[in-house]
Image (cartoon, rainbow, N blue to C red; front, side):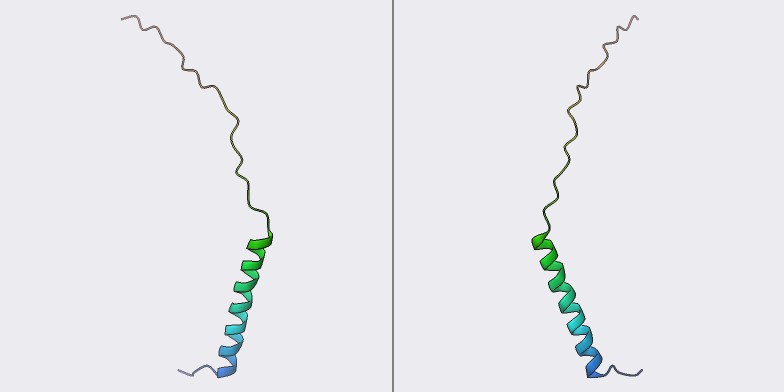
Length: 52
């Protein structure tokens, strides 16, 4: 099995480091997600009159 040339390892290292740095920068500058709270619904149980 052929080995990778050192230049290819350097390219992979630069690519992954730059993508990691870009990921951190985007996470820092993008606003945080706000959770959408559901509208409060009044859940009323129907009262059932059971006639046995």
